[in-house]
Image (cartoon, rainbow, N blue to C red):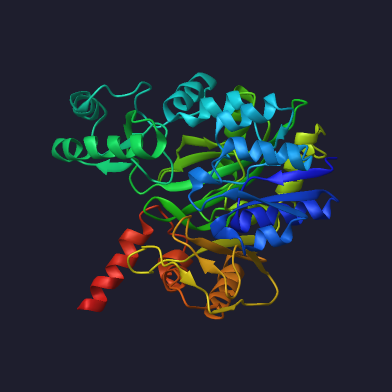
Length: 453
């Protein structure tokens, strides 16, 4: 196994990777920016090196500096975590060129799956169901209007290189698409350096259900069941659970098999996620491939008993998967909520110093933390500060554990989205499993209106 691994990330995911490395006897190297000089992840690592200024372009996205630190420290491999450089094909390629193992899929696979248009083409060839749409970039606004007319409204306008809901918008008429096209194209070009846009049919009242896969370099690929990630705000997930309360065993198996087919068709290796939209009739459609560890991976770990980071490390080292598909069992139900430093009403970030940070304790409760008491949440990075993960023998018990845990979570000095999360998990629609992607818009906004009345 590797003797030393550099973690090219920050916050809770850096701490998460460090924890598993230590359990395997692997030395760890952290990198940090000037804004993170007192961060938990740098304190947890065996070695820590300053990258540069607070801005991500000067620190966590500085490929040359990260490679330099890896060489200087003697790190044999780099774990990219999620976000930042985790799906950057050029970074993976540089690691390869420098003789450093990139803990993830090949640069070629990352590059192909980084384009939603290219990914759609490859999945169609592989025979994986895709949402009706186009497989080439839109030339201009007029082509967008004509394409939407052919597909039929509503449609989803998307940035080909996008993520996190940026450059994405539901449009229901020609007037709306004309208003949306130029603005979304500019945002995509600004955020991703690629303004290519495409259109696909919008699935009404969908569920966002993803399949976790593991693939080694010896031809073995398995799926680790599904995660339902439909509770979102601004197209970003905030509540995830496993298994899905919506799927039956037949659909579950079909989606798992489709995910394995998708992974094998592109030569995928390491951990990855095949994301699907699922309609009200349980028809499922390929959405995208996340070529990295997901934020919500802990719920899969809780129901399978596997350490996904450990599996990533073993695969990157060249080991075969130690289990077959039939060996992977499900045990209980797990739910994760993302704790953000943000105003629960507006979802705007809420930076500042945390003056009180008390965590709930008890059976079935797990924490993944990026901050502690007296930590300063800066405006430079994603405002997620922690993840709360709970497990119960079934979904009803997991929900009760989660309700109780959220009521005992105490954070002062900054605002958090905990009140919003409490409204979600206490809502009758959530408890009954009515967890479509429009949940927040449909139920929480209705609640606000009723309060005003």
